[in-house]
Length: 175
Image (cartoon, rainbow, N blue to C red; front, side, top):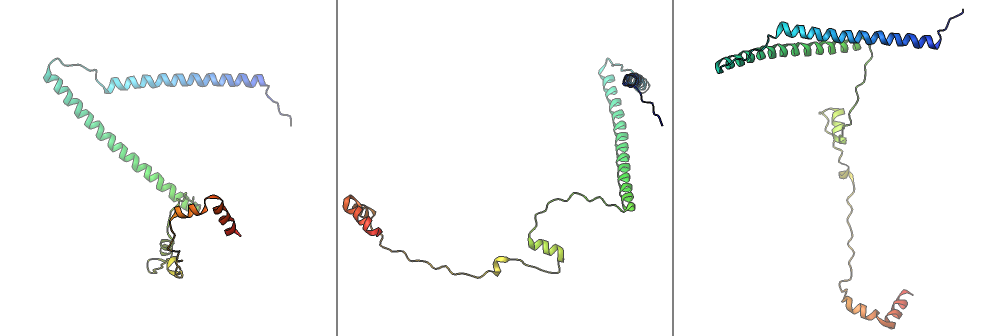
């Protein structure tokens, strides 16, 4: 079979045309959104007329507060229903995964646990296991070596070792 390949210049030209069409469509969509927003604002938001007296201003504030309360209630209800739908979708995804038989293992966290706690978790609370390793060790009594109590005056030892006679004593002691 002979396949005709498109030349690079033709590919480049077609790609440029497609990008231009996409750019025009995005610009038209942006203009349409702006017009739709303006139309919605004209329909739902009346033009603001500022009152001249204090009583009229207070009445305007009350009206705005009631409208804000109504909108907040609607937002809360929509948020609640959206969260409920998200939870339902999560539950359905879990059911789908269960039906497929594949279970995605969650990432496990590192838990520091003593050996006693680990054995108790494995064996249950019925079995009391105590792994106090120090209790199984033998008790060893330390022997205290007695040091000579009469150390003497350090100045006297220094005087004995001073001079030629002291050096001679050091050498004689080393042999």
